[in-house]
Image (cartoon, rainbow, N blue to C red; front, side):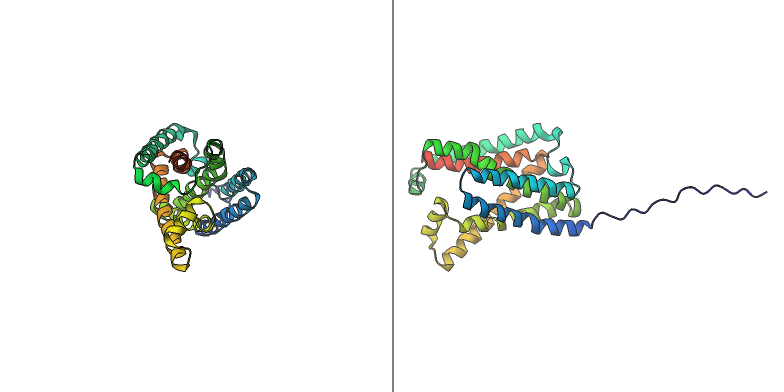
Length: 247
């Protein structure tokens, strides 16, 4: 007697949604281009409307993250990490505040930055509390330490994510370094505005911000949250505005 077992349903073969390397490469190009476009648009509309540009960019980056299949924990946005992110971020911000306080105690340093120009109290507070977080910090951190870091870590691991997102973060600052502003004007006066001075200024900007990106990534990894690098980034930028005011 021969027993024939019933044939079960054949397993379906599901094609992969996309190749991880292609996704990482595409985002590595798309995200900086989107940031450059948003920066150029923000420089044309001026303070105030540029916040709308920044918030719109966050919406676009969120859509890209969803299409890339990133989860909240990939982006550093899991609710379970909020407390850790706040603790690490506030601790890092306190170190930055201490550094600025030490700088204010150095007379020669105060004199060197005083020539940059002093904003009014109202302008400084609006910049520190509203313009910097909504117009700069949140979308930059979401782009580099959230979206790019998340997809690169998925595809190549932590070291590649730190290196890749930090290099792109440094290169991204070439565009702001070519713009106006008191800091860039002061650096141009110190280094010269010719080819050599501009090259030195851009190289220094890329190096410093690239190393800053490594620090922000490390904070992101240790806290598990995007909140921590956001708070440190905000403390550096907003603290710089207040430092100029107090100096």
